[in-house]
Length: 381
Length: 235
Image (cartoon, rainbow over all chains, first blue to last red):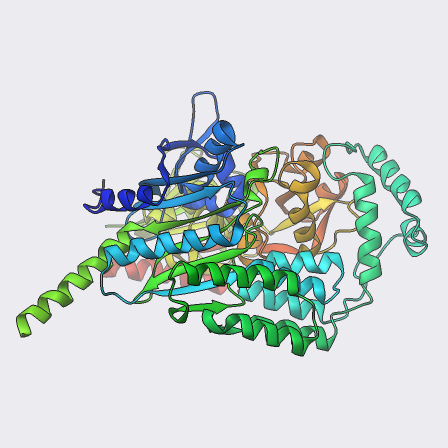
């Protein structure tokens, strides 16, 4: 077992001084929420076991989901800022599998721009305190702006969803853009019964046909996708199959995704982009600029922060801000906004959420590097 | 020291493996009675044969406790992480053909490709209050194909150890990932393979473990066996 870093209490002190309440999270957690939210890909990276009754359990691989579950259970009506510090457990091909993490989850705060800025400030100030004199680079992205660009281009709903799904994964997004800019010949060789119903947009007829086929083949009509759902998607898909993403829209998307500027210059760069592209993305920009203002007000160094338009996380519960803080190429803190997570986890009403986590093992490593430099400096003088 | 060769312990895989070894001039005789799980190669005194189940063979190759094995590529790639770093596929043997495929209900007439399936998966939770469920015994292959190759992150795997093709009709899962050789079992269960849904075209392979320290004499024996097999197998 790795030891808790000697500066752990300093972190909690700083975070609680900033108004967060420390919370204790059990090490053993039900596995389903993690697999449901983060996907099956997580399965090979977590430590899974089974309870005597067959329930699937795991060693906590992170804190956000259990903190959110606790919030839903105990305090879903009231805004709370939770601070945590402890071990997380993940399998890696090489190296250890126990890591210390600390962080904050700010749940239920409607003042989005201010909450975003506060999360970034707290992460950054903690790192500054732990790594005095070290140069920190912050990268920021915003899914809301991408969503606004895609919507303003007037792309069909299905395409918007595809692009937003791939946002943050450069290879997937490239593939998706290429795919949408080609005409995809209607690959579904529709049978003689379905084809005429589709070509006349006969939703009711198609639904009945699918329903009767399910009955005939012994499929339950309510256990999975329903006949109406299949019929609706087939008609939409057929309408789209002859269209493609036009060259102008593709250029606009590529121009947007290539944006990479100091945060200080980002509002202007985004405004210029919108003007050149002829897109109305004002609402998203108002939110973006409000966050930049709040960060400036918090004393955040906007010149040391980069905005990268393509920076995002391809999981469906992230919604707005994403950020990372690194030193010497190592990512020490990561965070973002996940307004969809709490309803996905069972909250009755939407609960805004933003947070960050710090990788203490990497911070310890960076501190050791600073100490070595200081020692050398001392010797040579 | 001696060389250990793991061969399938029963069924058509066993018969076909013995046949190809015999064709390569490597006649295998059981030690003791006909049904024992140990054997030797006639005239090769530093090689022994262990008859194991096909998926055990994959694991034993990964741990380096056998030198050579005959088993399906699907099982090796499913059971071993980064299989190519742990084993070498020496020769495709021309039998045990099976494709690992993504199959959806035929009645999903709007779904033909993995992109379609990605659309369905991303909307699933919103429409049905749960993630899309995939019945399979191929956890690793499914994760690699869905998550890494096709960027589909949100789905759940339901472990299925048999009769996987029945899972969609009975409501245990929405779609399946399974092996098929002719596709007839899938058709009988009103399932269709996605046009880009063939994850792996598998067949029996002669596979060599990389994680193993061996003597020069053993190396020569392994080289001779693989060369003989390569000469008589398809490629």
